[in-house]
Amino acid sequence: MTINNIIHNKLLRSTFIYTLTDGLNKALGFLLIPWVSFYLIPEELGIVTNFQVLQNILLLLAGQAIVNSLPYFFYNRSKKEVGTFIFNLLFLIIITNAFFVLLIFFLFNHIESVLQIGLPFQLLTIVNVICTLITTLNMTLFRLEEKPLQFAFWQTLQIILNVSLVILFVIVLKWGAIGKIYSLVITSSVTGLINMVLLIKQKYIVFKISRGYLKEILKFGIPLLPHSLSFWIKSGVDKIVITTYCGLTQNGIFSMALSIGAVFSLFSAAFNNAYCPYLQKRMNLFTQESVVDEKRKIVKQAYLLGMGYVFLGVFSFLFIWLCFHYFIDKQYIESIGYMPWIIAGQIFTGFYHLVIQYVYFAKKTIGLGIITFSCSVLQILFTFIFIQLYGTIGAAYSTCLGALITFVLVWIYSNHVYDMPWFYFIKRKWSLIRNDWS
Image (spheres, rainbow, N blue to C red):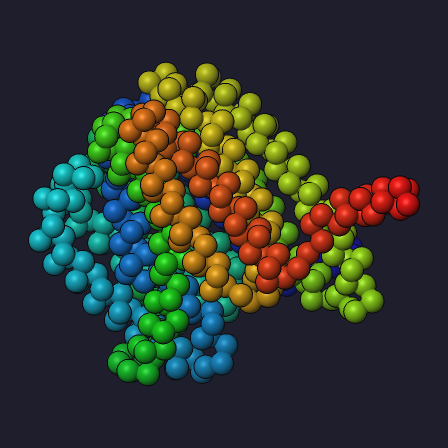
């Protein structure tokens, strides 16, 4: 394919724009970490982390799963029907968050005792949740309508606004944790309002309550909650346990380790976004004559990619070591002790993404949800035990062990629903040895 063809290929051009925008978002967030480390003490970073922990669980419960259902109901409906569908999505989001507001007023003392964030910040999480879901809706529509330039423009505007506010509130005004939280809330509020205006302007809001659509949305979204919650459990409960048993300062130090460790996921996520469509397309082209040979080639490729993840993990650790010694404030130097376990956990997560594709291809996702949720619950148990035995580093141990167990069980399940010759070379070698003996 020539460069001219690539430039004029709609799919490749859109993919490049989405990847570049997503990469810019993550890269700027990563580049801000060293600056923030000099202006936020670990205790303040712990407060910001707990604000995001509460926000993320409410985000999942308030409609992340139902908002993500939009692509599956978009193409077989007229624009007016999609507008009605989106209004009913927003209706469910508002009703759910109104319930959460009442719940917070009843439980704010208990929430504060666990997360150590006061009532005003607890209520601000509701603002963030509603605005984030509105923004997600419109960004999803841009993708579905194949408007990558509009997507990139508004996404970049959001990135610039957030970075500017962090610099203003945290670095210039030195407001600490409050400044970081305000930057999150103002960014989500402004972008949420803009995207709501865009939805109305594009006539994607049709003010009509539909029982049929409400049932359809809930029927799709509710079964996805256990799978979605499993990710929050892995990333959220450890922060709560660390805050409870070790304090906000240790929570901030551990959160810094996770933030810096995200350098691995920057590369692995970029690769995974490219590899998954390639693999799915390749598997759809299997024929009866080529399937055995093609499966063996894919298995070889998977093992090579797994080795690549290991090398990437080693490189990431060396890069992170340099960051901590030359760019991150010394008050976070303790975080480097957690990095080998965090990076190892991310390597196992990379392996997990390699084997989960066969489950999606076989369309056998019910068992996947059971496995991922069960592994998350098991990881909570490990976190409680290890933190009480070893302190904060126990959370790093449980993160690594949880990722390993999840990978192994999903690998076994994927091979059950879609057989792949993972050990064909061992069987072939054993067959040759037996032939020699005979």
